[in-house]
Amino acid sequence: MNRILYTMIRVGDLDRSVAFYRRLGLTELRRRDVPEGQYTLAFLGFAEDEHAAGIELTYNYDVERYEHGTAFGHLVFGVADLHGLCERLRAAGVKIRREPGPVKFGTTLIAFVEDPDGYRVELIEHG
Image 1 (spheres, rainbow, N blue to C red):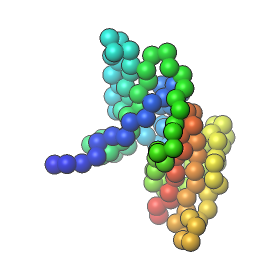
Image 2: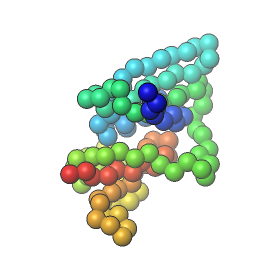
Image 3: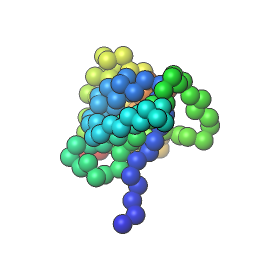
Image 4: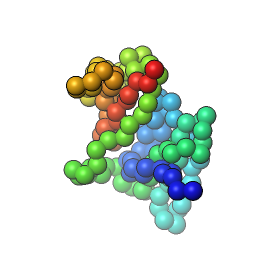
């Protein structure tokens, strides 16, 4: 079977990034430290379906920042309570890039937040 497994992003502080994505409801499924390669991988997904697509956070030893470039857009997560989640994220110090509201020319509710490494994350409310 062909399917998407993970989207990988590089992060400057693995524990800080894992904590951020946990606030979005993801669970750390496994972690692999590779000292000989000087990197650590953390695989995150939703606990109710650990075989579904997830994200892979890659921490390269001693690298704190990355340039994002212009090709990558953003990650997207479906959420049940957009306004409630945004309030909890705001209280935790997460930067809200676009307040919750309807998508332009539509009715679907979305918001954008920024993860600790500056990646944009779109949140979509699915009723």
